[in-house]
Amino acid sequence: MTPRLSLLLALFGLTTMGTASLVQADNEILGFAVVSEAPKDTARVSAKVSVNDAVSDMKLLASEAIQSNLIWKKLEICHAMRVEGYKVAEGFQVVTVHMIDAGMLPMSLQSFAGDCLIKKAVEIAPLVD
Image (cartoon, rainbow, N blue to C red):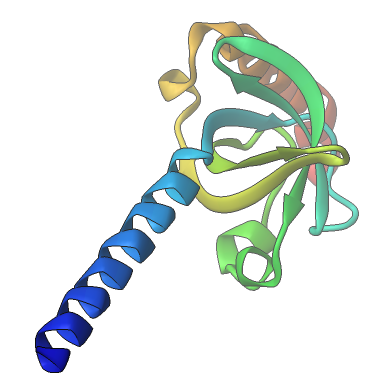
């Protein structure tokens, strides 16, 4: 009877751990962001972030894994992204990030992204020569 009991306890433990990881995954928030200022520090990037169609200015806080990504290193003003993570007191802690086209942003951010791209084309592009 002892082997059966230990097997049942092991299965119960695995089931409980699986449920705990699902609960943790449910706490992640899906958001969309547009970089609002030229990033000086890749660990803290200023952006307009939309979560549930509520737009606010936040800092995107990147972990070491995100910062080592080549695309994150090349981040520029007006870049649009889909982010998953957690709201924290300092901003938005990024867990995963996907770069997207500005047309894939929610409507609440599309006007900001369009204005940002026009401003970038008029003010910044002529200085490249």
